[in-house]
Image 1 (spheres, rainbow, N blue to C red):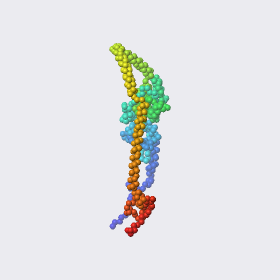
Image 2: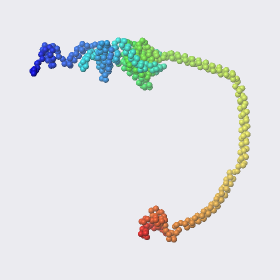
Image 3: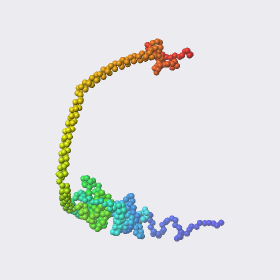
Image 4: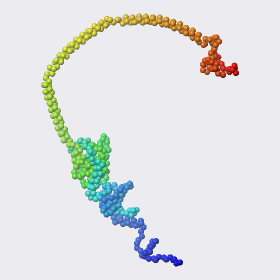
Length: 472
């Protein structure tokens, strides 16, 4: 049997190395994972501390913590990005998937997932084309909700008592509106001062529109009958607050009619679609808000003259018609005179008939009075009849009373003869049951030891029944 011996492997270039050990003369540095991550983070942040990156927004998610996580992409790569909570509200636009943007910030690494990402500090649309694309998509979305429908538009009041203006209090816009209103028809104007561009302008414009709507109609501060949302001209970026969704919704929800007067005649914002009327300029908005007072006075004067002339013509025409009808009718006295004669004749006949009737009735009354007896004679005869009837009734009563007494005596004698008590004097007696006072008529009704009462002609005695000894 051959002998088996073990042989250590040769230490060579291809020998497996199970345990790491420093090699003499080696120059490869050794890092921990954390050390390498920190050095990579420092290198990336130092090299790309401030960058501008253009790309299309891919995934975009606003976390419940308030941080915004998104990705930027182009044809060849995808870059993760994050915008911290405090910076999201300062971006100036609302990121959405598909938007072409330019983001400014710095690159950093995220060691937990071994990736690098862009920390976004500011964001802007990549050119006017991207901005117009975003506005068109927003317009289509709001239009699909019905915010721009024509049936939502309300007619403006002919002459509003109070006009509310939402604009900057220091610009030329408010002065132009006030001067134009003063020239045309002075009205009570309430100004709600707001910034019309820049960060936070959209929220304050929307709050102003809703604030005017929240006023009470007869409150200390009167509620406007008409609102004007206005600002002067500017670039597309300057007019962006009037394209924000919250401003458009506030104008569409307003219960007070709204005139939009944003920018110059060639400028169009989304607020123009939601408002009840669009004015090309703030001055034109003031002209559309009120009529010209002098023109109204002239119109009223002319209408009064026309009304007076029409009334004069109407009266003259009716006079002519009455005159023509009078000539056609002739003299009315000719129709009235026969009627008057008939009336007089009927009145005379009525007087004669009344006199004749009165005399006839008077004669009948006299005849009836002669046939009537004097009341004293009638009373005397009635008294005699009453006395006679009284005597007759008394005689009949005495006779009937005597007959009744005799009949009663006969019945008393018969009752006495038939009464069982009549024989008690001859030695008879009546036996009663003591408890029920019932007359006992049979010996079988008497039970031993029962109590009885015996009545005789001169009184009664109680007794107790004993045993029947004869049977015993």
